[in-house]
Length: 88
Image (cartoon, rainbow, N blue to C red; front, side, top):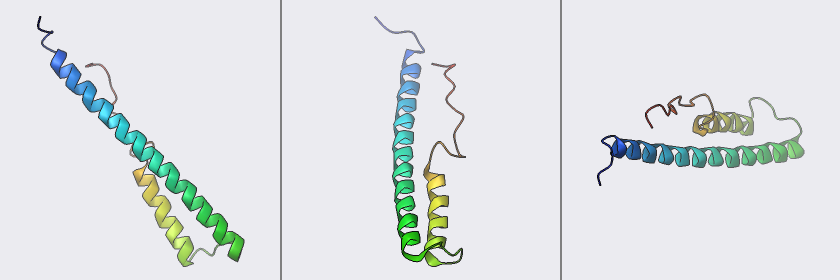
């Protein structure tokens, strides 16, 4: 027995969404690991040198790294509003 005409399209869409979800989870996990690392780096630098100076190399690195991790994080500003399930 053949499925309804839209079954194959719905199955494909579901597969695409599942893969997107898995990629987003992986991106979020990576972002969280990097944030934890950056917090440890900041804590170590502050323990060694006191408050970080805004223009120090480590401070500039941390600023850049936080911007990068915000870009990686799929729950951040670039959250894609395409999770509509109306066509599933």
